[in-house]
Structures are given as C-alpha cells and as structure tokens.
Length: 154
Image (cartoon, rainbow, N blue to C red; front, top):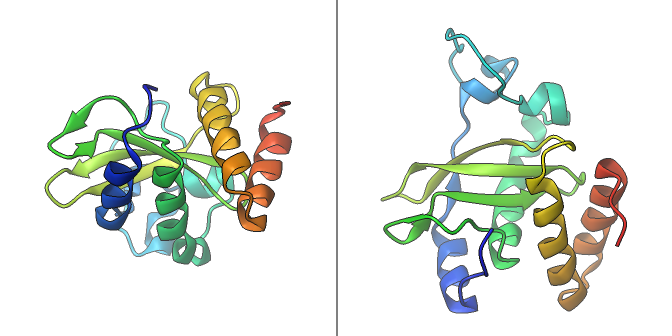
C-alpha cells in the first residue's frame, strides 16, 4: 500500500466507486441475486462462508466502501482515475479487498481478507490511524471488532 492520495482525490473516488457482487466470491451466489459460478475455484475467499456476509449486509457495502476510501485504503496502481485495488473494513470487523471490475464506471467486486494475509495488518494500521483522526462511534466499533477478529494490538 502506498501513501494515500489527497483528501480531494479520495472524496471524488468515494462519490464514484460502487460495488458489484461476483459469484466467484460467494458460496451461494443465487442468495445474492447472482448466477451460479461453474468454474473451478482456486484459493478464492467467499464472503458468505469466510466472513459470514449475507444478503442483508449488501445495504452496508456502500458505506463501508466510502469509509475505506476516505481512510485512504487504496492501492498504488491506478487505471484511469480508479485504483485497481482498495480495501474496506466492515462494521463486523472484517477487512474486504475490492478489485476493479470496470474502471470507467468505478465498479469493484470484493472478498474478505483472511487473518493470515500480510495485507491485513497494513490495512488495519492505516484504518486505525484514520479512526484516531475520525473518532466516530461506528468507526471505533469497526476498528475494535477488526482488532479482535484479526488479533491485532496497537
């Protein structure tokens, strides 16, 4: 993860970015209104199986995505004006990685980051620093849940 872009760049991206679910990262895609995924899976993580993410959580994805972008949880490789990778911390404490699906529409698909992945610590550290500057209860609660879920200490 590189240094975060300017707050202005992040604010613009937060307005434009959107989530589009992928059947590749769902154990039960029809439950999310997605077609079955009939390809072999290698090491993909599944939102519903690994992170307990259900259809009712879809209503929160936009706010998680926006919060992650505002916190500077973006990768250093950009396509046009959109980073190829970004991260979000859910209210449940899970870190989700978003990969660009359509750069002209700023559309991302995502999946949970498992606790043993090195990127989790980097995302957590940047999120923690941002939460310290933006100490809203919802942000603080997500951070505390992330700490517990991933076993992080300050």
